[in-house]
Image (cartoon, rainbow, N blue to C red; front, top):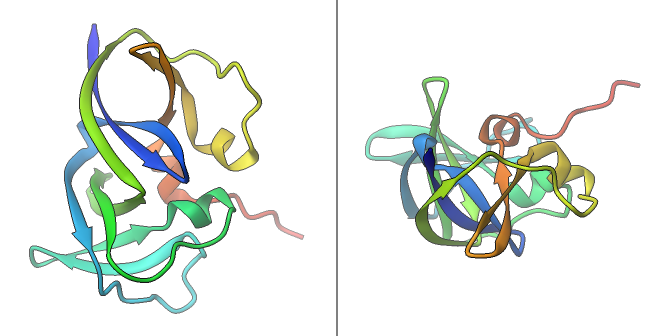
Length: 143
């Protein structure tokens, strides 16, 4: 059985987002910061009279923070809420048959947390992103 996925680039890594969660792809700017929000929450953005939380994928991976200015975001719908997932680039929607396999290489802690395995498309292994885990962000370790 084929499933549809959106190919995106996050922090230089081509990855897959399950298309069932994707509502649209937009250019966004003027993101309002949220005081005391976790580091992976970039802020809030109004889209078609709806407010959505913008997730900074770079911060979620633990490799810095996205810069200011216009950004590309994939708008996803999870548990009745809208989120904007910041991405470097959006490629295409593709149908891929099969189930995800384990990555053949060791993933960094950030990628390992947000990966649901690997699917191949045209001979290229692509990480399948767990959107709900990405929205939840890094696990905080209590002292």
